[in-house]
Image (cartoon, rainbow, N blue to C red; front, side, top):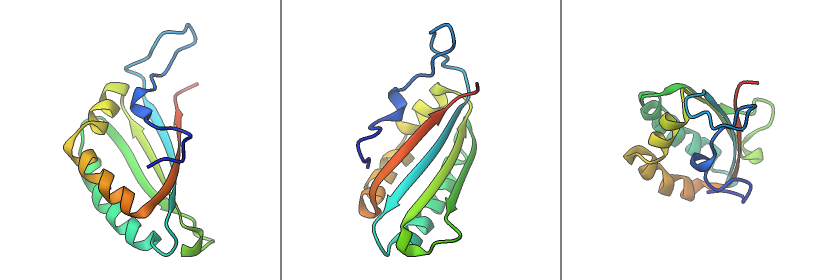
Length: 121
């Protein structure tokens, strides 16, 4: 599910200062998810279950599920912070069975998302 800003992050290699792909560089993801009104808590519960599985995958160094602590469920935003050891680890995650099983769940709850992919400066 996407709002059109980023369709598939697995296709985005990091580029170093000399213009060469860095397939073994760490990847950092900030994901901002727009959840359907009134469904945030149910979505977060499902996402925590999925995150438990993802955290066990090779290459996942960190995955945190975060919500706005000031605004309530009407805001309908959920945030995910992920750190992956490398592009190949992220690619394997995006193509595995757990990710495939998550996609229909996300479609049930998510209106759109914005993904920021970062690397070390």
